[in-house]
Length: 154
Ligand code: HEC
Image 1 (cartoon, rainbow, N blue to C red):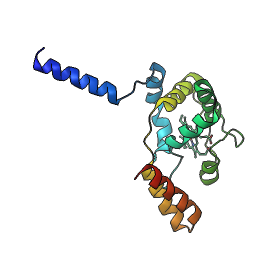
Image 2 (cartoon, rainbow, N blue to C red):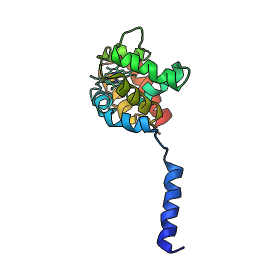
Image 3 (cartoon, rainbow, N blue to C red):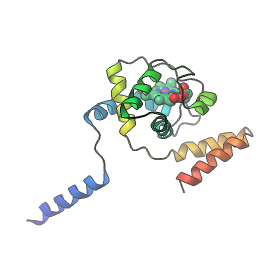
Image 4 (cartoon, helix red, strand yellow):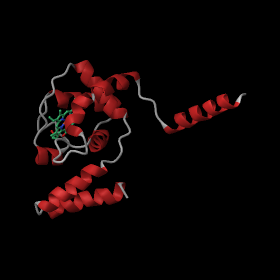
């Protein structure tokens, strides 16, 4: 084997060990994700939506399987109500999300992408949240977000 082929093989092995494959639906869904990211971008100050890292976690903890995850998310995004919302803290701080009446098959693909993506912990968001909570004298929230920073970002 000539040297360049050897390095190609090595880098292919390296890439496959360090990345994960999105399903075909998720790859399609990712293309529409900017319509969510405009609000769910963790670096926004002030924030317009909760970072997807936490949304994904809550949905994983509150649904029974992947299908339920995707369906519950589609149901919510089409027509958010306080009863359907499981991120109660975000509803309290930011108000209920406005409905995004995209076609079901597109919403399903977006939700599949959100299910499969490996989000990094939203450290920038927590730093912003600590600063904002401290500025308004809300020590309880400042402390809560500081704990998240220490737990996931140090
Ligand atoms: C205009 C801003 C905005 C856009 C655009 C937006 N969101 Fe949201 N989203 C929010 C806010 C604010 C919340 C927090 C309040 C809530 O949960 O309703 C939220 C919460 C959520 C939640 C958690 C719901 C819960 O159980 O409480 C999900 C899931 C979600 N968004 C999915 C999406 C998806 C998928 C998209 C893109 C198709 C999207 N959002 C686009 C603002 C937005």
